Amino acid sequence: MRIIISLVVVLGISLSSVVSASEEDFEVFSVKDQNGWPILVRYHRGTGAVWLAFKGRYKLVKENEDLPKSEYKVIEHNLQSHWRICRIDKKTGKTWFYNGSKWEAVAEET
Image 1: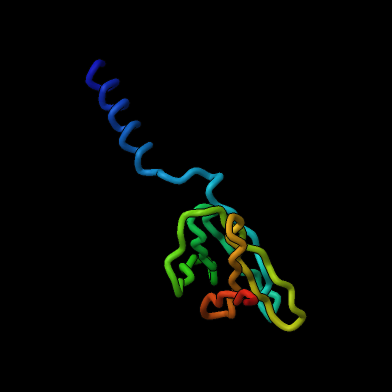
Image 2: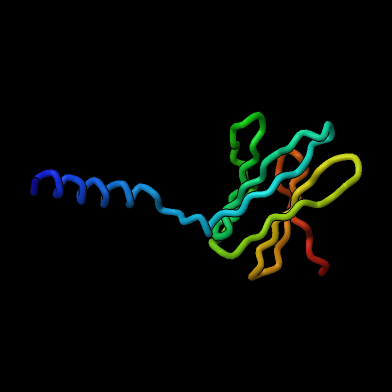
């Protein structure tokens, strides 16, 4: 009996360490493509990483630059003919548009 309890405790600790991110670290919403099909957009609020789900499988959106840990938000940018998403670093204000293949930083006025 002690062996079984010890094994359950050890397995419980091992499994809990596998999951490092909490549900509160991620946000998800959907956009519609030009044909009206839903695309899931999932992002990590602390890293700014974004995944898009096409046909039931998430794919990580490649970054053009290293993003610092911060507080990010991703929102849909509504256009009549197609969808776009944008991301903002809520601490610095830096903003990016996703053009369908890559992130484009929005330039600051100098």
